[in-house]
Image (cartoon, rainbow over all chains, first blue to last red; front, side, top):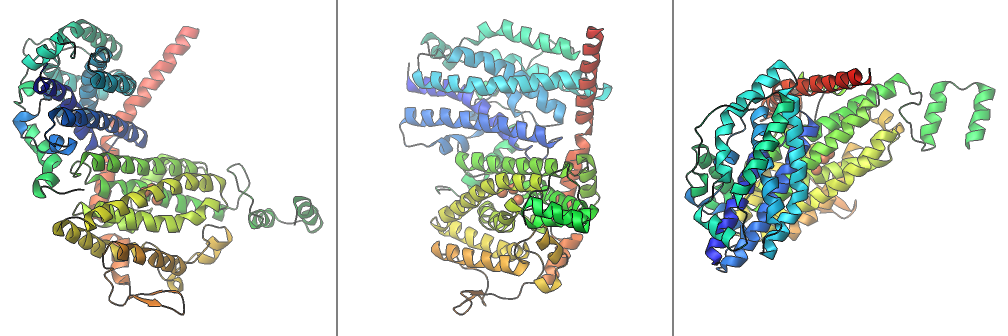
Length: 251
Length: 326
Ligand SMILES: [Fe+2]
Ligand SMILES: [Fe+2]
Ligand SMILES: [Fe+2]
């Protein structure tokens, strides 16, 4: 497998961690109580830690002197390969939790397979991340239940978020050409195989939370091809601000 | 006096509860939540511990302002972890305060209505990345000097919380100074950014030690209860003497033309602090007082439905368990 394909495959995973980590970072200091604030910051730290491991590996693979920071901060929007789901804004706590829950359920299934990758570095990163992401999944599932089966207001709010974000879940399972090459070479995970377990997991938690899955046949995609929502540019303006304003400096 | 002697002594002269209490403190015994304590001790401690807790969580805001824009992944992660530590400090301190019989809701209420104060330093804006360095170096640095003596203060839960807090604050201070070193050794723009941050944060940091001794109330009482070991002016002097060489070492200039080593007192003489500015900010008219309070009140109000949901859910689960048991 060519390094370039592998790099693109890794972006498809790592960019999700970066962008979701960035979104969670926005909330630090603004949570509904201190305990939740600390827990969400923990998830941001885990995701950004994973991002660094992946990007350091990409830097090594590309062998052109690029650093993890060049990769994180100096690509153009079209080169980020995260799914649309993770870039969706923190409209309210219900959105934050639903976005997290939809991603965590996928992320954990993905990592459980990815730890068997024949690429040792990727496998090691996945293995380490599983512990962290199982905690994320527990956290977001618990909150989905609290909000769904809490008060009338919380039920309505989390259902609203589910209705809005459900259309971004399908993209999680799409495979790009690079993904397919990675699967053929034993590096990557066939995401089609994760779908059934994913749906089951979502259904279980939603049932307890008394939340209904919207009946839509229309889903959104594009992130994996680098065609993002209009939110992405603003997120990147923040993320890239220092590196763009002060190029070629050490921080 | 030993415990026994005090007891005997107490029996003979029928010492008041208050006298016994003061003797315990004089002997460096810790006061614990269940112990008898004078009402004034309780009130003073609620005021000081909650003010400290509020400072930790309001202090998350100026630095939180730069998390999404941190210049490297390493710095972003370190800053996130730092701000998270401050949340943790808030948590320990609120818990310590709650042992004195006041709820977290009441404490927040006091903060949000302006009845309780927090450290004025957090009412200044963070306008460049270098402010993350300056805050860690100077603000956490000043906080440590203020707080290390509290690790042996008389109220047990507060003293224990402070031991954990101080350990992390010294880590923050080193991390902040390290940001400044990197900037000072960097490009001309970076060096200028570092100097500018030092210029803006120096004087407010000196104000963190509070008014001069001549103007300071409560000092005598606080000394007796070991809420204070040194006066404001002594602590301020210690901070200056410690920080000036650190600035020199990395080629930054302290923005005080009157700063001069005084061989006789083995410390620096320094210029006049603008106490008008200090009182302006304390009284609520600093550059960011409104913004900080709005952010806190917003987080609390927008979180209300979430907290209610958690409570309602917990109750439902409890009821389910009960039903099963029956
Ligand atoms: Fe502090
Ligand atoms: Fe702190
Ligand atoms: Fe700190």
